[in-house]
Image (cartoon, rainbow, N blue to C red; front, side, top):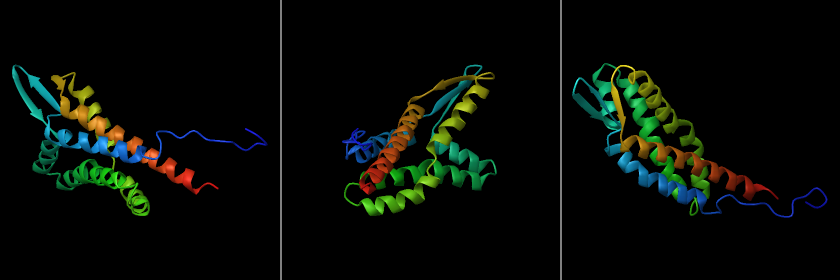
Length: 161
């Protein structure tokens, strides 16, 4: 620092970080949707479920509105936000506009937290095994959060004089 003004600031991840993290999140999104999240067993019987079977189960048990919200906030919005952040280098204005809208609805970390709470509650009653789908979904969530943060940091750095 000289005269209370920084001479240089360190960049976190560089200018390509949002797009790179978003691509990583998109890579994890496909197995997160298709692979089983967990296997629950009791007395020798076991059942596996993934993200889409959870949504279908909510719909079949009389909660169609909740099923739609889980599908939108836990599935569609995060993937759209990741796709938008992937294109953020090429179209920063569109990514910023769509990102602000989708960031309010993309809540995969809430879904991960809900699954973890369910695991702790179910773990007392039945045997629960965490499978690859939940790990991929968690990695997608973390990549989304990191990509969005890097994108917002890049926006604030570019707007400073």
